[in-house]
Image 1: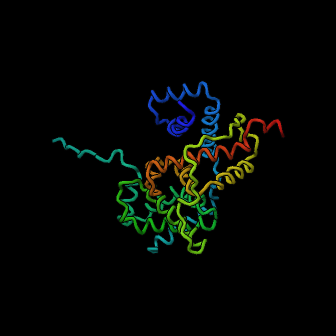
Image 2: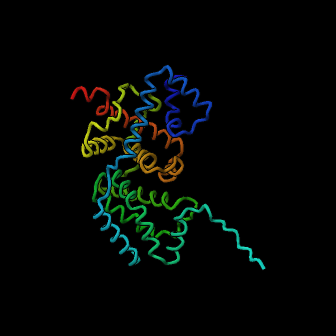
Image 3: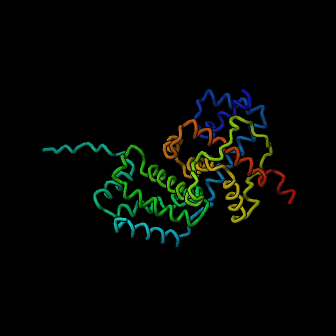
Length: 78
Length: 208
C-alpha cells in the first residue's frame, strides 16, 4: 500500500468504516510508515480538539433573548 | 376477555417526530422544546458560515421561523434536525450574499483542486498539545485556524465532525453527493491538521 492509497482511506479508518481485512492492510502500512502514522494521529487529534472545545458557544443571556424572540414571532404566526 | 393492545409501531421513532406532530396539531409549546433543543447548534453553524455574530443571531431566528412556517412541508423522511440545519445553511448563505451586495455565494467557492495530494508537513505533535495554551488562547487558535479554511471545506467539517451529522445527512443538508462530502471532509481535516501543527508541534514547549 502506498501513502496515497493510505490517505484515500484515512477518513474511513478514522470513522471506523473499513472492513477488518482492510484495517489489517492499513495497520501493515502504518508499521513501516512514520509519515502516515503522524498524519493519522494528528488528524485524529485535530477532530478531537474541535469536538471537545466549544469555540462559538452562545452566552446564556443571548440564548434566552434569541429564544424569546423566536417564540414571540412564532406565536404571532410570524 | 383479554384485550389485545395494538402493536406499538413507533418504538424506535426519533423523539422529535412526536414534538413535530404536536406542533402541527397547534401546540406551540412543543415547538418551544424543539427550539431549545437545537438553538445552540443552529447558532454555531450560522456563525461558522457567516463569521459574524449579528448575522448568526438573525440567521438563528429566521431559520427557526422558516422551519415553523414550513413545517407542513417536512416529510419526516429525514430527521427534523437535518432538515432544520439545511434551512439554517441556506439562510446563512443568503445572509452572506446580502453582505456581499448580491454576489452569488455558494458552498463551492474557494475549493482548490489538490485532490489526493499527500501532506508534506511531517511534524508530530506534543502529547496533549492543547495544554500548552490557556482556554482563551486555544479558542483563538482554533477559531483562526478554522476560519482560514475555504467555505466549502469548513461547512462540511463543522457539520460532520463538530455537530456530528453522518456523511449521508451532511450530503443531504448541503445538497452534495456523498463522494463530494467525503472528499471535502478529508481535505478539511488535513488542512486543519497542517495549520494546527504550527501551534502544536512537538518542540513548542522546549522553544518557549
